[in-house]
Figure 1 (cartoon, rainbow, N blue to C red):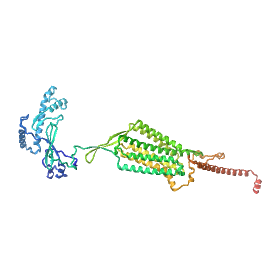
Figure 2: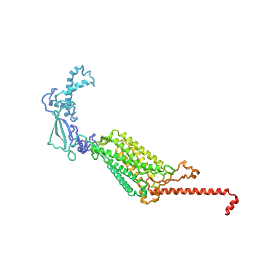
Figure 3: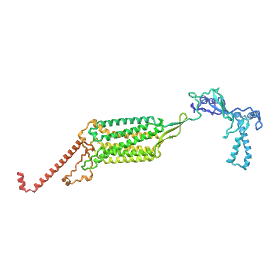
Length: 583
Protein backbone atom coordinates (compact mmCIF):
# COMPACT_ATOMS: atom_id res chain seq x y z
CA UNK A 1 0.00 0.00 0.00
CA UNK A 2 2.72 2.41 -0.96
CA UNK A 3 1.46 3.29 -4.43
CA UNK A 4 0.66 6.84 -5.39
CA UNK A 5 -3.10 6.31 -5.15
CA UNK A 6 -2.86 5.75 -1.37
CA UNK A 7 -3.04 8.61 1.18
CA UNK A 8 -2.55 7.78 4.85
CA UNK A 9 -4.65 9.14 7.76
CA UNK A 10 -2.84 8.45 11.04
CA UNK A 11 -3.51 9.22 14.73
CA UNK A 12 -2.69 12.75 15.84
CA UNK A 13 -0.76 11.88 19.01
CA UNK A 14 2.44 10.60 17.37
CA UNK A 15 5.64 12.31 18.48
CA UNK A 16 7.34 14.68 16.05
CA UNK A 17 9.69 12.86 13.67
CA UNK A 18 8.31 9.52 14.89
CA UNK A 19 9.60 7.76 11.75
CA UNK A 20 13.18 8.27 12.92
CA UNK A 21 12.58 5.69 15.67
CA UNK A 22 13.59 3.03 13.12
CA UNK A 23 17.15 4.32 13.15
CA UNK A 24 17.41 3.75 16.94
CA UNK A 25 17.54 0.58 18.94
CA UNK A 26 13.77 0.47 19.27
CA UNK A 27 12.81 -3.20 19.45
CA UNK A 28 9.42 -2.48 17.89
CA UNK A 29 11.01 -1.11 14.74
CA UNK A 30 10.70 -3.27 11.64
CA UNK A 31 14.04 -4.63 10.39
CA UNK A 32 12.83 -4.33 6.79
CA UNK A 33 12.04 -0.61 6.79
CA UNK A 34 14.41 2.29 7.32
CA UNK A 35 13.35 5.76 8.44
CA UNK A 36 13.70 6.89 4.82
CA UNK A 37 11.33 4.16 3.63
CA UNK A 38 8.72 5.11 6.21
CA UNK A 39 9.05 8.83 5.59
CA UNK A 40 8.61 8.27 1.84
CA UNK A 41 5.26 6.63 2.52
CA UNK A 42 4.19 8.87 5.42
CA UNK A 43 5.14 12.15 3.76
CA UNK A 44 1.93 14.13 3.34
CA UNK A 45 -0.18 12.03 5.73
CA UNK A 46 -3.22 13.59 7.42
CA UNK A 47 -4.41 13.69 11.03
CA UNK A 48 -7.84 14.52 12.43
CA UNK A 49 -8.13 15.69 16.00
CA UNK A 50 -10.41 17.73 18.15
CA UNK A 51 -9.83 21.45 18.30
CA UNK A 52 -7.57 22.70 21.12
CA UNK A 53 -9.22 23.18 24.49
CA UNK A 54 -11.09 26.48 24.63
CA UNK A 55 -10.04 29.08 27.21
CA UNK A 56 -13.35 29.01 29.10
CA UNK A 57 -13.43 31.03 32.36
CA UNK A 58 -16.89 29.85 33.30
CA UNK A 59 -17.21 26.90 35.58
CA UNK A 60 -18.58 23.67 34.15
CA UNK A 61 -21.06 21.32 35.79
CA UNK A 62 -18.36 19.90 38.10
CA UNK A 63 -17.58 23.35 39.49
CA UNK A 64 -14.21 23.82 37.75
CA UNK A 65 -12.97 25.92 34.86
CA UNK A 66 -10.94 24.46 32.04
CA UNK A 67 -7.69 25.93 33.27
CA UNK A 68 -8.29 24.67 36.80
CA UNK A 69 -8.92 21.16 35.54
CA UNK A 70 -5.78 21.17 33.38
CA UNK A 71 -3.69 22.34 36.32
CA UNK A 72 -5.08 19.56 38.52
CA UNK A 73 -4.40 16.96 35.81
CA UNK A 74 -0.82 18.17 35.43
CA UNK A 75 -0.24 17.67 39.15
CA UNK A 76 -1.64 14.16 38.79
CA UNK A 77 0.80 13.38 35.97
CA UNK A 78 3.75 14.60 37.99
CA UNK A 79 2.69 12.58 41.02
CA UNK A 80 2.27 9.29 39.18
CA UNK A 81 4.84 9.87 36.43
CA UNK A 82 2.17 9.42 33.76
CA UNK A 83 4.01 11.57 31.22
CA UNK A 84 5.15 8.37 29.59
CA UNK A 85 1.71 8.04 28.05
CA UNK A 86 1.97 10.06 24.85
CA UNK A 87 -0.96 12.31 24.10
CA UNK A 88 -2.60 11.79 27.50
CA UNK A 89 -2.90 15.52 28.14
CA UNK A 90 -4.62 16.03 24.79
CA UNK A 91 -7.19 13.26 25.18
CA UNK A 92 -7.85 13.09 28.93
CA UNK A 93 -10.38 16.00 28.82
CA UNK A 94 -12.45 14.09 26.28
CA UNK A 95 -12.49 10.96 28.44
CA UNK A 96 -13.49 13.07 31.43
CA UNK A 97 -16.34 14.73 29.52
CA UNK A 98 -17.52 11.34 28.26
CA UNK A 99 -17.84 10.05 31.82
CA UNK A 100 -19.74 13.19 32.84
CA UNK A 101 -22.09 12.74 29.86
CA UNK A 102 -22.86 9.15 30.81
CA UNK A 103 -23.52 10.19 34.43
CA UNK A 104 -25.92 12.96 33.32
CA UNK A 105 -27.75 10.59 30.97
CA UNK A 106 -28.21 7.98 33.68
CA UNK A 107 -29.39 10.58 36.17
CA UNK A 108 -32.02 11.97 33.77
CA UNK A 109 -33.25 8.46 32.85
CA UNK A 110 -34.19 7.47 36.41
CA UNK A 111 -37.57 9.23 36.38
CA UNK A 112 -38.58 7.86 32.98
CA UNK A 113 -37.58 4.34 33.99
CA UNK A 114 -39.66 4.66 37.15
CA UNK A 115 -42.73 5.42 35.03
CA UNK A 116 -42.21 2.00 33.43
CA UNK A 117 -41.78 0.37 36.83
CA UNK A 118 -38.10 -0.10 36.15
CA UNK A 119 -34.85 0.91 37.76
CA UNK A 120 -31.14 0.42 37.17
CA UNK A 121 -31.17 -2.32 39.79
CA UNK A 122 -33.68 -4.57 37.99
CA UNK A 123 -33.38 -3.86 34.25
CA UNK A 124 -31.85 -6.54 32.04
CA UNK A 125 -28.90 -5.94 29.75
CA UNK A 126 -30.96 -6.52 26.59
CA UNK A 127 -33.95 -4.41 27.71
CA UNK A 128 -34.86 -2.53 24.54
CA UNK A 129 -37.34 -0.23 26.29
CA UNK A 130 -34.68 0.96 28.77
CA UNK A 131 -32.20 1.35 25.93
CA UNK A 132 -34.60 3.61 24.03
CA UNK A 133 -35.06 5.84 27.09
CA UNK A 134 -31.30 6.18 27.68
CA UNK A 135 -30.53 6.86 24.00
CA UNK A 136 -33.17 9.58 23.94
CA UNK A 137 -31.64 11.38 26.91
CA UNK A 138 -28.11 11.03 25.48
CA UNK A 139 -29.21 12.75 22.28
CA UNK A 140 -30.75 15.61 24.28
CA UNK A 141 -27.59 16.31 26.30
CA UNK A 142 -26.03 19.72 25.86
CA UNK A 143 -23.49 21.13 28.29
CA UNK A 144 -20.07 22.76 28.45
CA UNK A 145 -17.32 20.34 29.30
CA UNK A 146 -13.58 20.59 29.80
CA UNK A 147 -13.09 20.01 26.05
CA UNK A 148 -15.74 22.54 25.05
CA UNK A 149 -19.46 22.43 24.21
CA UNK A 150 -20.75 18.86 24.25
CA UNK A 151 -23.61 17.36 22.22
CA UNK A 152 -24.23 14.16 20.23
CA UNK A 153 -25.77 13.21 16.90
CA UNK A 154 -28.43 10.51 16.45
CA UNK A 155 -25.70 8.03 15.59
CA UNK A 156 -23.75 8.80 18.76
CA UNK A 157 -20.99 10.93 17.27
CA UNK A 158 -19.93 14.02 19.18
CA UNK A 159 -20.73 17.40 17.70
CA UNK A 160 -17.43 19.21 18.15
CA UNK A 161 -14.98 21.26 16.05
CA UNK A 162 -12.25 19.25 14.32
CA UNK A 163 -8.80 20.29 13.12
CA UNK A 164 -7.36 18.68 9.95
CA UNK A 165 -3.55 18.70 9.80
CA UNK A 166 -1.00 17.43 7.31
CA UNK A 167 2.67 16.51 7.41
CA UNK A 168 4.46 19.00 5.16
CA UNK A 169 8.19 18.62 5.16
CA UNK A 170 8.75 17.39 8.70
CA UNK A 171 6.11 19.50 10.47
CA UNK A 172 2.38 19.02 11.08
CA UNK A 173 0.52 21.99 9.60
CA UNK A 174 -3.18 22.77 10.22
CA UNK A 175 -4.91 23.08 6.87
CA UNK A 176 -8.62 22.93 7.75
CA UNK A 177 -11.27 23.45 10.41
CA UNK A 178 -14.59 21.57 10.53
CA UNK A 179 -17.55 22.94 12.49
CA UNK A 180 -19.85 20.07 13.47
CA UNK A 181 -22.77 22.35 14.30
CA UNK A 182 -22.92 24.12 10.95
CA UNK A 183 -21.39 21.16 9.08
CA UNK A 184 -19.07 23.50 7.23
CA UNK A 185 -15.42 22.96 6.31
CA UNK A 186 -13.01 25.88 6.17
CA UNK A 187 -9.73 25.27 4.33
CA UNK A 188 -6.58 27.35 4.59
CA UNK A 189 -5.95 27.92 0.88
CA UNK A 190 -2.74 29.79 1.59
CA UNK A 191 -1.09 26.43 2.15
CA UNK A 192 -0.26 24.68 -1.10
CA UNK A 193 -1.24 21.01 -1.27
CA UNK A 194 1.05 18.75 -3.26
CA UNK A 195 0.10 15.13 -3.96
CA UNK A 196 2.73 12.47 -4.38
CA UNK A 197 1.56 11.30 -7.79
CA UNK A 198 2.05 12.07 -11.44
CA UNK A 199 0.17 15.17 -12.52
CA UNK A 200 -0.41 16.26 -8.90
CA UNK A 201 -3.98 14.95 -9.09
CA UNK A 202 -6.24 14.79 -6.06
CA UNK A 203 -6.65 11.10 -5.15
CA UNK A 204 -10.06 9.58 -4.71
CA UNK A 205 -11.39 8.70 -1.27
CA UNK A 206 -11.80 4.99 -1.97
CA UNK A 207 -11.28 2.27 -4.57
CA UNK A 208 -12.77 3.03 -7.93
CA UNK A 209 -15.35 0.58 -9.20
CA UNK A 210 -14.86 -0.09 -12.90
CA UNK A 211 -17.35 -1.95 -15.06
CA UNK A 212 -15.18 -3.62 -17.66
CA UNK A 213 -16.69 -5.35 -20.69
CA UNK A 214 -15.45 -8.88 -21.23
CA UNK A 215 -14.04 -9.13 -24.74
CA UNK A 216 -12.62 -11.99 -26.73
CA UNK A 217 -8.83 -12.27 -26.60
CA UNK A 218 -7.21 -10.74 -29.64
CA UNK A 219 -5.25 -13.92 -30.39
CA UNK A 220 -8.46 -15.96 -30.47
CA UNK A 221 -10.14 -13.42 -32.73
CA UNK A 222 -7.20 -13.30 -35.15
CA UNK A 223 -6.91 -17.10 -35.22
CA UNK A 224 -10.60 -17.70 -35.96
CA UNK A 225 -10.87 -14.90 -38.52
CA UNK A 226 -7.69 -15.97 -40.30
CA UNK A 227 -8.69 -19.64 -40.47
CA UNK A 228 -12.21 -18.72 -41.63
CA UNK A 229 -10.82 -16.38 -44.31
CA UNK A 230 -8.49 -19.09 -45.58
CA UNK A 231 -11.42 -21.51 -45.60
CA UNK A 232 -13.57 -19.08 -47.60
CA UNK A 233 -10.75 -18.55 -50.12
CA UNK A 234 -10.18 -22.30 -50.55
CA UNK A 235 -13.92 -22.90 -50.94
CA UNK A 236 -14.23 -20.17 -53.58
CA UNK A 237 -11.35 -21.78 -55.50
CA UNK A 238 -13.06 -25.16 -55.28
CA UNK A 239 -16.40 -23.77 -56.47
CA UNK A 240 -14.70 -21.82 -59.27
CA UNK A 241 -12.92 -24.97 -60.54
CA UNK A 242 -16.14 -26.93 -60.21
CA UNK A 243 -18.01 -24.40 -62.35
CA UNK A 244 -15.22 -23.97 -64.91
CA UNK A 245 -14.77 -27.72 -65.48
CA UNK A 246 -18.44 -28.64 -65.12
CA UNK A 247 -18.43 -30.24 -68.60
CA UNK A 248 -15.64 -32.65 -67.61
CA UNK A 249 -16.98 -36.15 -66.99
CA UNK A 250 -15.32 -36.48 -63.60
CA UNK A 251 -17.17 -33.32 -62.47
CA UNK A 252 -20.34 -33.91 -64.40
CA UNK A 253 -21.15 -37.34 -63.01
CA UNK A 254 -20.87 -36.05 -59.39
CA UNK A 255 -23.68 -33.45 -59.73
CA UNK A 256 -21.69 -30.17 -59.91
CA UNK A 257 -24.69 -28.07 -58.86
CA UNK A 258 -25.08 -30.06 -55.67
CA UNK A 259 -21.36 -29.63 -55.04
CA UNK A 260 -21.79 -25.88 -55.47
CA UNK A 261 -24.52 -25.96 -52.81
CA UNK A 262 -22.08 -27.68 -50.44
CA UNK A 263 -19.48 -25.03 -51.22
CA UNK A 264 -21.87 -22.15 -50.53
CA UNK A 265 -22.99 -23.76 -47.28
CA UNK A 266 -19.33 -23.94 -46.24
CA UNK A 267 -18.91 -20.23 -46.93
CA UNK A 268 -21.99 -19.56 -44.78
CA UNK A 269 -20.45 -21.53 -41.89
CA UNK A 270 -17.15 -19.64 -42.21
CA UNK A 271 -19.02 -16.32 -42.21
CA UNK A 272 -20.82 -17.42 -39.03
CA UNK A 273 -17.42 -17.75 -37.33
CA UNK A 274 -16.39 -14.29 -38.57
CA UNK A 275 -19.62 -12.82 -37.17
CA UNK A 276 -19.06 -14.75 -33.92
CA UNK A 277 -15.68 -13.06 -33.41
CA UNK A 278 -17.24 -9.59 -33.77
CA UNK A 279 -17.64 -8.70 -30.11
CA UNK A 280 -20.74 -6.63 -29.32
CA UNK A 281 -19.09 -5.43 -26.09
CA UNK A 282 -15.93 -4.28 -27.81
CA UNK A 283 -17.77 -2.44 -30.60
CA UNK A 284 -20.42 -0.77 -28.40
CA UNK A 285 -23.35 -2.09 -30.41
CA UNK A 286 -26.79 -0.65 -29.85
CA UNK A 287 -29.50 -3.02 -28.66
CA UNK A 288 -30.90 -3.42 -32.19
CA UNK A 289 -27.45 -4.07 -33.65
CA UNK A 290 -26.74 -6.61 -30.90
CA UNK A 291 -30.02 -8.44 -31.64
CA UNK A 292 -29.20 -8.57 -35.36
CA UNK A 293 -25.73 -9.85 -34.47
CA UNK A 294 -27.20 -12.65 -32.33
CA UNK A 295 -29.63 -13.85 -34.98
CA UNK A 296 -27.20 -13.51 -37.89
CA UNK A 297 -24.55 -15.82 -36.42
CA UNK A 298 -27.26 -18.36 -35.49
CA UNK A 299 -28.87 -18.33 -38.95
CA UNK A 300 -25.57 -18.43 -40.85
CA UNK A 301 -24.29 -21.37 -38.83
CA UNK A 302 -27.44 -23.50 -38.61
CA UNK A 303 -28.74 -22.91 -42.14
CA UNK A 304 -25.23 -23.35 -43.57
CA UNK A 305 -24.70 -26.59 -41.68
CA UNK A 306 -28.12 -28.02 -42.56
CA UNK A 307 -27.79 -27.08 -46.24
CA UNK A 308 -24.36 -28.66 -46.64
CA UNK A 309 -25.25 -31.75 -44.66
CA UNK A 310 -28.54 -32.16 -46.55
CA UNK A 311 -26.60 -32.11 -49.83
CA UNK A 312 -24.23 -34.81 -48.54
CA UNK A 313 -27.20 -36.81 -47.31
CA UNK A 314 -28.93 -36.53 -50.68
CA UNK A 315 -25.82 -37.72 -52.55
CA UNK A 316 -25.45 -40.61 -50.11
CA UNK A 317 -29.08 -41.57 -50.61
CA UNK A 318 -28.60 -41.58 -54.39
CA UNK A 319 -25.63 -43.96 -54.14
CA UNK A 320 -27.62 -46.19 -51.82
CA UNK A 321 -30.63 -46.29 -54.19
CA UNK A 322 -28.45 -47.14 -57.19
CA UNK A 323 -26.35 -49.87 -55.58
CA UNK A 324 -28.71 -51.27 -52.96
CA UNK A 325 -29.39 -54.55 -54.83
CA UNK A 326 -27.48 -57.13 -56.82
CA UNK A 327 -30.22 -57.49 -59.41
CA UNK A 328 -29.85 -55.97 -62.80
CA UNK A 329 -32.10 -52.94 -62.60
CA UNK A 330 -31.47 -49.56 -64.05
CA UNK A 331 -32.01 -46.58 -61.64
CA UNK A 332 -32.54 -43.05 -62.91
CA UNK A 333 -32.25 -40.42 -60.15
CA UNK A 334 -32.22 -36.90 -61.48
CA UNK A 335 -30.70 -33.86 -59.82
CA UNK A 336 -34.20 -32.46 -59.31
CA UNK A 337 -34.84 -35.18 -56.78
CA UNK A 338 -31.71 -34.23 -54.90
CA UNK A 339 -32.72 -30.56 -54.93
CA UNK A 340 -36.11 -31.51 -53.52
CA UNK A 341 -34.51 -33.44 -50.65
CA UNK A 342 -32.20 -30.54 -49.83
CA UNK A 343 -35.05 -28.03 -50.00
CA UNK A 344 -37.32 -30.02 -47.71
CA UNK A 345 -34.66 -30.61 -45.05
CA UNK A 346 -33.55 -26.97 -45.05
CA UNK A 347 -37.17 -25.72 -45.08
CA UNK A 348 -37.88 -27.57 -41.84
CA UNK A 349 -34.85 -25.90 -40.21
CA UNK A 350 -35.92 -22.45 -41.45
CA UNK A 351 -39.45 -22.97 -40.13
CA UNK A 352 -38.05 -23.76 -36.67
CA UNK A 353 -35.91 -20.61 -36.73
CA UNK A 354 -38.80 -18.42 -37.92
CA UNK A 355 -41.05 -19.74 -35.15
CA UNK A 356 -38.23 -19.06 -32.68
CA UNK A 357 -38.02 -15.42 -33.80
CA UNK A 358 -41.80 -14.93 -33.63
CA UNK A 359 -42.59 -16.61 -30.31
CA UNK A 360 -39.34 -16.13 -28.39
CA UNK A 361 -37.57 -12.93 -29.51
CA UNK A 362 -34.04 -12.13 -28.37
CA UNK A 363 -33.35 -9.58 -25.64
CA UNK A 364 -29.95 -8.19 -24.66
CA UNK A 365 -29.00 -8.59 -21.02
CA UNK A 366 -25.93 -7.40 -19.12
CA UNK A 367 -24.37 -9.83 -16.67
CA UNK A 368 -21.72 -9.03 -14.06
CA UNK A 369 -18.93 -11.44 -13.27
CA UNK A 370 -16.84 -11.93 -10.15
CA UNK A 371 -15.20 -8.80 -8.74
CA UNK A 372 -11.43 -8.55 -9.09
CA UNK A 373 -8.89 -6.20 -7.52
CA UNK A 374 -6.51 -4.70 -10.07
CA UNK A 375 -2.83 -3.94 -9.41
CA UNK A 376 -3.81 -0.29 -8.86
CA UNK A 377 -6.28 -1.23 -6.12
CA UNK A 378 -9.40 -0.57 -8.21
CA UNK A 379 -12.37 -2.93 -8.06
CA UNK A 380 -12.95 -4.33 -11.55
CA UNK A 381 -16.31 -5.94 -12.27
CA UNK A 382 -16.32 -7.87 -15.57
CA UNK A 383 -19.52 -7.29 -17.49
CA UNK A 384 -20.79 -8.85 -20.69
CA UNK A 385 -23.83 -8.35 -22.87
CA UNK A 386 -25.43 -11.61 -23.88
CA UNK A 387 -28.36 -12.74 -26.01
CA UNK A 388 -31.19 -14.05 -23.84
CA UNK A 389 -34.28 -16.02 -24.85
CA UNK A 390 -36.98 -17.10 -22.41
CA UNK A 391 -37.15 -20.63 -23.79
CA UNK A 392 -33.64 -20.99 -25.16
CA UNK A 393 -33.23 -24.55 -23.84
CA UNK A 394 -36.47 -25.74 -25.42
CA UNK A 395 -35.60 -24.35 -28.85
CA UNK A 396 -32.06 -25.70 -28.61
CA UNK A 397 -33.41 -29.19 -27.84
CA UNK A 398 -35.68 -29.01 -30.90
CA UNK A 399 -32.81 -27.96 -33.18
CA UNK A 400 -30.37 -30.50 -31.73
CA UNK A 401 -32.97 -33.28 -32.02
CA UNK A 402 -33.71 -32.49 -35.66
CA UNK A 403 -30.06 -32.23 -36.65
CA UNK A 404 -29.30 -35.32 -34.57
CA UNK A 405 -31.85 -37.29 -36.61
CA UNK A 406 -30.15 -36.10 -39.80
CA UNK A 407 -26.73 -37.13 -38.44
CA UNK A 408 -27.97 -40.60 -37.47
CA UNK A 409 -29.66 -41.04 -40.86
CA UNK A 410 -26.45 -40.11 -42.65
CA UNK A 411 -24.39 -42.52 -40.56
CA UNK A 412 -26.86 -45.35 -41.28
CA UNK A 413 -26.73 -44.72 -45.05
CA UNK A 414 -22.93 -44.55 -44.97
CA UNK A 415 -22.83 -47.88 -43.15
CA UNK A 416 -25.08 -49.49 -45.75
CA UNK A 417 -22.91 -48.39 -48.69
CA UNK A 418 -19.61 -49.03 -46.93
CA UNK A 419 -18.70 -51.92 -49.31
CA UNK A 420 -19.34 -50.00 -52.51
CA UNK A 421 -16.24 -49.07 -54.48
CA UNK A 422 -16.92 -46.47 -57.16
CA UNK A 423 -14.58 -45.48 -59.93
CA UNK A 424 -15.92 -41.91 -60.02
CA UNK A 425 -13.29 -40.40 -57.73
CA UNK A 426 -14.40 -42.84 -55.03
CA UNK A 427 -17.14 -40.38 -54.00
CA UNK A 428 -18.85 -42.73 -51.55
CA UNK A 429 -15.77 -42.88 -49.33
CA UNK A 430 -15.26 -39.11 -49.54
CA UNK A 431 -18.83 -38.51 -48.42
CA UNK A 432 -18.38 -41.07 -45.65
CA UNK A 433 -15.32 -39.24 -44.33
CA UNK A 434 -17.20 -35.92 -44.34
CA UNK A 435 -20.25 -37.30 -42.51
CA UNK A 436 -18.20 -39.15 -39.90
CA UNK A 437 -16.11 -36.03 -39.17
CA UNK A 438 -19.29 -33.96 -38.82
CA UNK A 439 -20.75 -36.48 -36.38
CA UNK A 440 -17.57 -36.67 -34.26
CA UNK A 441 -17.07 -32.89 -34.07
CA UNK A 442 -20.73 -32.31 -33.22
CA UNK A 443 -20.46 -34.77 -30.34
CA UNK A 444 -17.25 -33.09 -29.08
CA UNK A 445 -18.77 -29.60 -29.31
CA UNK A 446 -22.00 -30.70 -27.63
CA UNK A 447 -20.26 -32.45 -24.74
CA UNK A 448 -17.83 -29.59 -24.05
CA UNK A 449 -20.64 -27.04 -24.25
CA UNK A 450 -22.58 -29.01 -21.64
CA UNK A 451 -19.62 -29.66 -19.34
CA UNK A 452 -17.78 -26.32 -19.40
CA UNK A 453 -19.45 -23.69 -17.14
CA UNK A 454 -20.99 -20.57 -18.69
CA UNK A 455 -18.45 -18.24 -17.04
CA UNK A 456 -15.69 -19.89 -19.09
CA UNK A 457 -17.03 -18.21 -22.22
CA UNK A 458 -13.60 -17.88 -23.88
CA UNK A 459 -13.03 -21.65 -23.82
CA UNK A 460 -16.53 -22.30 -25.14
CA UNK A 461 -16.00 -19.81 -27.96
CA UNK A 462 -12.63 -21.34 -28.85
CA UNK A 463 -13.94 -24.92 -28.95
CA UNK A 464 -17.11 -24.05 -30.88
CA UNK A 465 -15.24 -21.93 -33.42
CA UNK A 466 -12.46 -24.46 -33.98
CA UNK A 467 -14.95 -27.34 -34.40
CA UNK A 468 -16.92 -25.43 -37.04
CA UNK A 469 -13.74 -24.51 -38.93
CA UNK A 470 -12.41 -28.09 -38.85
CA UNK A 471 -15.72 -29.63 -39.96
CA UNK A 472 -16.21 -27.17 -42.80
CA UNK A 473 -12.68 -27.53 -44.15
CA UNK A 474 -12.86 -31.34 -44.02
CA UNK A 475 -16.23 -31.39 -45.82
CA UNK A 476 -15.12 -29.03 -48.57
CA UNK A 477 -11.86 -30.95 -49.15
CA UNK A 478 -13.65 -34.31 -49.12
CA UNK A 479 -16.12 -33.20 -51.77
CA UNK A 480 -13.88 -31.22 -54.11
CA UNK A 481 -10.26 -32.33 -53.56
CA UNK A 482 -10.45 -35.85 -55.13
CA UNK A 483 -11.95 -34.53 -58.35
CA UNK A 484 -9.50 -31.64 -58.58
CA UNK A 485 -6.65 -34.09 -58.03
CA UNK A 486 -7.85 -36.24 -60.96
CA UNK A 487 -8.21 -33.15 -63.14
CA UNK A 488 -4.65 -32.15 -62.24
CA UNK A 489 -3.04 -35.56 -62.75
CA UNK A 490 -5.22 -36.65 -65.69
CA UNK A 491 -7.72 -39.49 -65.88
CA UNK A 492 -9.12 -41.97 -68.40
CA UNK A 493 -12.43 -40.55 -69.55
CA UNK A 494 -13.66 -43.96 -70.74
CA UNK A 495 -13.70 -45.11 -67.13
CA UNK A 496 -16.25 -42.45 -66.25
CA UNK A 497 -18.85 -43.11 -68.93
CA UNK A 498 -20.52 -45.58 -66.58
CA UNK A 499 -20.42 -46.54 -62.95
CA UNK A 500 -18.84 -49.81 -61.92
CA UNK A 501 -19.40 -51.08 -58.42
CA UNK A 502 -18.34 -54.05 -56.43
CA UNK A 503 -20.97 -55.06 -53.91
CA UNK A 504 -20.76 -57.97 -51.52
CA UNK A 505 -23.57 -60.31 -52.67
CA UNK A 506 -26.19 -61.54 -50.30
CA UNK A 507 -26.32 -65.21 -49.34
CA UNK A 508 -29.54 -65.71 -51.28
CA UNK A 509 -27.95 -64.48 -54.49
CA UNK A 510 -25.03 -66.92 -54.29
CA UNK A 511 -27.25 -69.99 -54.84
CA UNK A 512 -28.08 -70.06 -58.52
CA UNK A 513 -29.42 -73.14 -60.32
CA UNK A 514 -28.79 -74.24 -63.87
CA UNK A 515 -32.52 -73.81 -64.53
CA UNK A 516 -32.12 -70.03 -64.16
CA UNK A 517 -29.35 -70.05 -66.72
CA UNK A 518 -31.40 -72.15 -69.11
CA UNK A 519 -34.25 -69.66 -68.86
CA UNK A 520 -31.79 -66.88 -69.74
CA UNK A 521 -32.14 -65.15 -66.36
CA UNK A 522 -28.67 -63.69 -66.36
CA UNK A 523 -27.00 -62.96 -63.03
CA UNK A 524 -24.69 -60.25 -64.26
CA UNK A 525 -22.68 -57.74 -62.28
CA UNK A 526 -24.63 -54.51 -62.90
CA UNK A 527 -23.30 -51.53 -64.70
CA UNK A 528 -25.56 -48.61 -63.91
CA UNK A 529 -25.29 -45.01 -65.11
CA UNK A 530 -25.93 -41.92 -63.07
CA UNK A 531 -29.28 -40.18 -63.28
CA UNK A 532 -27.94 -37.22 -65.25
CA UNK A 533 -25.92 -39.18 -67.89
CA UNK A 534 -26.10 -38.03 -71.46
CA UNK A 535 -27.72 -39.79 -74.40
CA UNK A 536 -24.38 -41.12 -75.54
CA UNK A 537 -23.69 -42.59 -72.11
CA UNK A 538 -27.07 -44.33 -72.14
CA UNK A 539 -26.33 -45.85 -75.54
CA UNK A 540 -22.92 -47.01 -74.37
CA UNK A 541 -24.54 -48.53 -71.33
CA UNK A 542 -27.03 -50.48 -73.45
CA UNK A 543 -24.25 -51.59 -75.77
CA UNK A 544 -22.21 -52.87 -72.85
CA UNK A 545 -25.24 -54.72 -71.50
CA UNK A 546 -25.96 -56.32 -74.89
CA UNK A 547 -22.33 -57.37 -75.32
CA UNK A 548 -22.39 -58.89 -71.85
CA UNK A 549 -25.57 -60.82 -72.64
CA UNK A 550 -24.18 -62.00 -76.02
CA UNK A 551 -21.03 -63.28 -74.31
CA UNK A 552 -23.03 -65.18 -71.73
CA UNK A 553 -25.38 -66.59 -74.38
CA UNK A 554 -22.43 -67.73 -76.52
CA UNK A 555 -20.88 -69.42 -73.51
CA UNK A 556 -24.16 -71.14 -72.70
CA UNK A 557 -24.70 -72.18 -76.34
CA UNK A 558 -21.20 -73.65 -76.60
CA UNK A 559 -21.75 -75.57 -73.39
CA UNK A 560 -25.04 -77.03 -74.62
CA UNK A 561 -23.56 -77.98 -78.04
CA UNK A 562 -20.73 -79.88 -76.37
CA UNK A 563 -23.17 -81.68 -74.13
CA UNK A 564 -25.43 -82.60 -77.08
CA UNK A 565 -22.46 -83.91 -79.04
CA UNK A 566 -21.41 -86.05 -76.09
CA UNK A 567 -24.91 -87.58 -75.74
CA UNK A 568 -25.09 -88.35 -79.48
CA UNK A 569 -21.79 -90.19 -79.38
CA UNK A 570 -22.93 -92.38 -76.49
CA UNK A 571 -26.11 -93.56 -78.37
CA UNK A 572 -24.27 -94.69 -81.48
CA UNK A 573 -23.17 -98.40 -81.95
CA UNK A 574 -19.45 -99.27 -82.10
CA UNK A 575 -19.60 -99.90 -85.88
CA UNK A 576 -21.36 -96.61 -86.42
CA UNK A 577 -18.82 -94.83 -84.27
CA UNK A 578 -15.96 -96.42 -86.31
CA UNK A 579 -17.64 -95.56 -89.59
CA UNK A 580 -18.29 -92.10 -88.33
CA UNK A 581 -14.72 -91.80 -87.26
CA UNK A 582 -13.47 -93.06 -90.65
CA UNK A 583 -15.67 -90.61 -92.41
